[in-house]
Length: 179
Image (tube, rainbow, N blue to C red; front, side, top):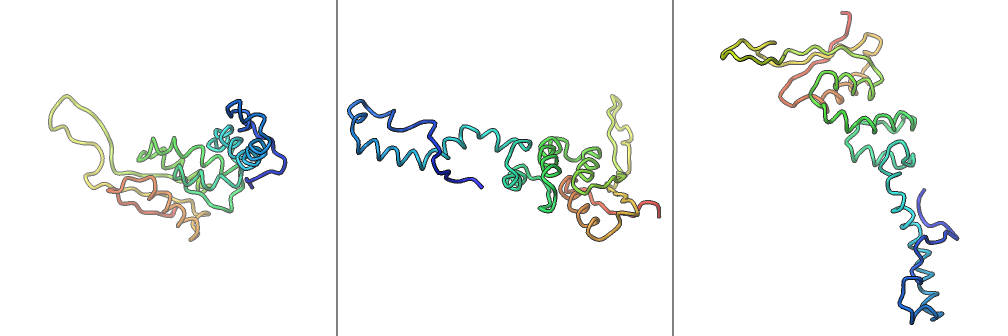
């Protein structure tokens, strides 16, 4: 846990930054030394701020907050190395949000499950007007879950993962693979 550390020296003692007239005043030097004891953990935290926002370096008890900051879907039961990997991948996945590959990767990371995703749409460009669009006219998404992962908890987690990554206008369904 972070907080005050007894005997921690300040990297930036306040007494040294005062005008010359106060450098020899024992009361002022004691008072600033007391402030140094309070501010030393703050300065050390600010000097090492990059370690708090890097999932590979952040303290284990800080990863949950960092996951919320990048909107990563996590579970407090996960070991720190898995939590670090999901948090580190979250920003990149958000950039690719809405794509099938990103959805499969998100489900694999969050649910530890390989799924197959079948979508109804497609994309194509043409120089000819009124060219028939690829895919089906009604958007939909089917996530095929392996039979050995077809339990209630995994299905609920997969549904949350799909809701987080799928565009809001596309309905989805979960189906058991190999029916």
